[in-house]
Image (cartoon, rainbow, N blue to C red; front, side, top):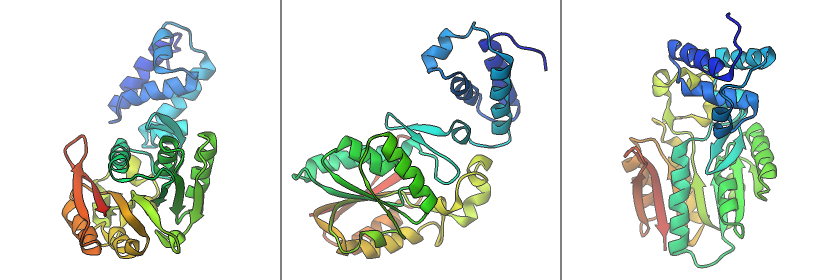
Length: 285
């Protein structure tokens, strides 16, 4: 490989290499920022700075790993979500922008329907903790609890909570079981919702490197919604709010499950920024 001298040369070579290997060119910038410890603006300002052989070697090793499918977030160890940096690893799902929209809508509903400040809020299947921690950061007076069936995921959530100074209650267990015996004002969940049959159509970065327990569910991806719809009526206060992230073809089915569970509730689906059904909410009054 020809020796490089400047930052811009390293970025250009990596971008071309990733493009040739069917990956997004923009990943090169993220990996280079990570290697050099620079913000985006800092990287732009440093384009004509020299890059050392060691820096380039470590950067290029990550570029090659990403070309083989390893997600950028696993190589950098973090992802931005709702303006905050969260640690991620192969034990948890990588945060997606769509989940930010779940939080935005939830905060609007809380502002509209809830009057008390010390809300009891639960996040079922928290993974890296993005929903629970973000809600706690946005509503500091709320009592927020996060559950997950994976001890490894909860360890990541606990570390994220510590780093972001977010005091949440973390509980190990299947779906809503850790919440039983208490009443909740808001229950949120982004559960596994991909049908097993859809696995071949996923990108290899998702299928081969993210935890299948956080991706796939039985009954065409609907099994966990069905189970939660049966469990949640005994857990919700009135007024109460339920918010689920869903697969884009699951809106009608999940709406019906929640409407059957809460006949008097206002139940609706909401599209994401890409105009796909992405969330279902139930407002119990």
